[in-house]
Length: 142
Image 1 (cartoon, rainbow, N blue to C red):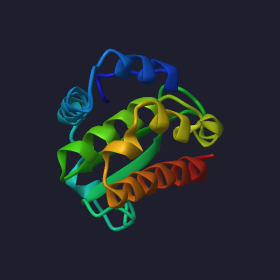
Image 2 (cartoon, helix red, strand yellow):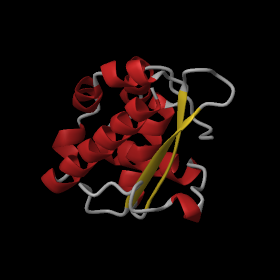
Image 3 (cartoon, helix red, strand yellow):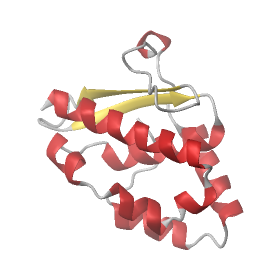
Image 4 (cartoon, rainbow, N blue to C red):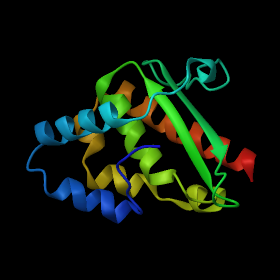
């Protein structure tokens, strides 16, 4: 699983507050993407593809074998910044229940890290497509 572990949106916001500008935040996201564990090629299917994203993004939820009722995710992407955002979301959602994932205020996170201001509208839509896919998959495991 991903080595970075953020327990809450507040933890992620705190991490981003240490970064002075978007260039540093972009670098941080790129590093998160590089740290993301490889997703097996067999899991990169049409069912796990995030079609709302212009980048090639795959994400899949699994029941956590060590924690009953909890979920963990695997994912991959072909672009650095979106892969970093995917890694951030995986870090946030891993180890949570489907209910906890559904209730997370992702808008508050994205507003706090100034995501909308620093991504193109097309990428912004794609990121929300990733969130929707992850929440949908988590609910399917409930």
